[in-house]
Amino acid sequence: MQTATNKTITFGIPCYNSAEYMDHCISSIVEGSGHAEDVHIVVVDDGSTKDNTLAKAQAWHDRFPSIVDVVHQENGGHGRAVMAAIEHAKGVYFKVVDSDDWVDADALKEMLERLREFVAFQVQVDLMVTNYVFEHAEDGKQRTIDYGFALPKGKVIGWRQIGHFNVAQYMMMHALCYRTEVLRTCGLELPAHTFYVDNIYAYVPLPHCKTLYYLDVDLYRYFIGRDDQSVNMDVQVARVDQQLAVTRIMTRAYHLYDDISAKELRRYMIGHLTLMLSVCSVVSKMSTAPDARKNLDDLWHEFKRYDMRMYNRSRHGLMGTFMNFRGPIGERITIAIYHASQKLFKFN
Image (spheres, rainbow, N blue to C red):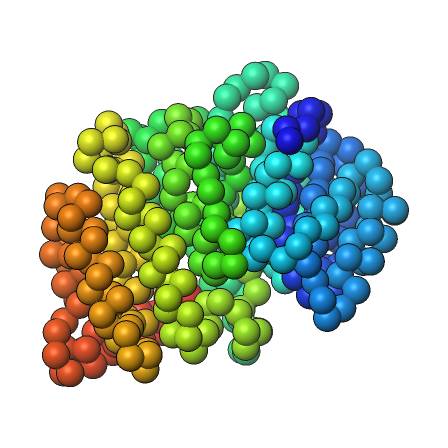
């Protein structure tokens, strides 16, 4: 299904047993945009079972039928809910907002103003990048991820004009607003019942984006604090198999040195891929699962067979080396480096 495009942007909101907090998310878009009629929201109830998520979503549609649409589907996980939202999108642009997160009203208004200009003047921008803010419930502190120095501000550019991204600046889902047609034609596929698929979403479409624009506003508010969140360290360790599955998909998405002509984009993508492989290495070493280290070794061996040049760049670069020290002492050093990075960058 591809619906008629008559909106500036669609916000896809995947929901699973989200009744406790989804109103804040939806309200931040509806109220924050001033009930703008060129804004479209697709709330996807991904087979919720424990609460009235679907009823709440329907209530929003009843109040704002020209803005909010509701999709109900059997449970398929976050990735399948995102794919359903893309399928039903009516906007020229598309952005995911998770149901426990929200957007800033002033930043939203500025983003909408810029996107409307692109549409009105037929300026094809395939990707808009904005900042996002970690909202830490535990201590009430915030950490903003911006793209200063990495991206020129307020300019339509190509990949050859990007700069260097530091380890905290990889463009996660929260920063990205794609042109919807890019998502529908790039071959994006997010597997069912799998966490961490937002990394695929932030990686696979990039070579299909010919132009991008960095708007320096703190739009996305990323809530950190629920014990069951996928970024919680204990949860990551328990779901190491899903980390490995997502990273395996990413390693096989491209032969970067053959498929990507812009060396700047290639450098960025190999860096993102190396970060994912490094996370896999750390959580595998922290796991008590008997096959965790074997599965990690299998991933690296498969990657080596798939593309030796990409493997060497990831495994033997600085990050790959630090995250893959061997032996009991080496593993403790690797984990210590990771924990130090956590405290420095407060990424979960």
